[in-house]
Each structure stands twice: as structure tokens, then as C-alpha cells.
Length: 89
Image 1: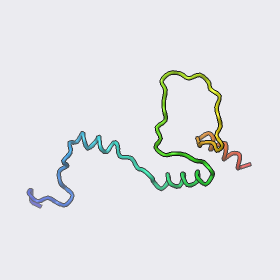
Image 2: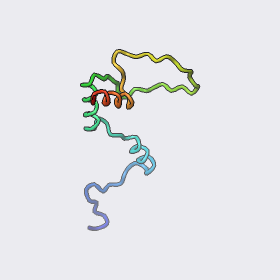
Image 3: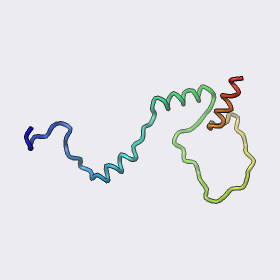
Image 4: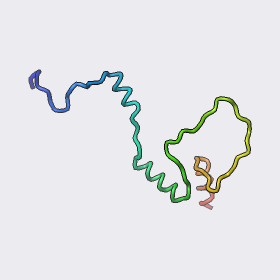
């Protein structure tokens, strides 16, 4: 093909290389199939959760506080291992 002829899909990017890199670094996969499967299973097991919630982080050390348990415990990796172990018995 000649120099002046552009093929489909070969246009110049209107963003700088740095800006395109910055944009792409912020794109994340959401609601992927494995994520939906895990959420569905957790929900059927009775776990409730929220997506995209900011967790407040304090910089000063906090003393030991007595933990309060909700009616339905929230899910964490250690809870999942305990649940799986108790169901295998």
C-alpha cells in the first residue's frame, strides 16, 4: 500500500502516550464471570456484602476493642475456611 493510504484501525491516537497510559491504568474489569459466581454463592450461603465501599483507615494505633458480632457474620477468608471446615465434618 502507498504511504498516503491508511488502513482501517490504524489512525493516530489523539491522546499523548502518557495520558493514554494513565487512562488505561485506571480501567479495571468489573462484574466478570468468576466474580459473579462467587457473589452468587456467597449470597446463597447467607452472606451479605456491599461492593465498592470505602473502608475508613486511621493512621493512629487503636487499642484492642471488644468485637461485636452481627446476626449474620461478614465474609472474610478466615471465616470461609472455618465454614468450609465445619461443613466437611
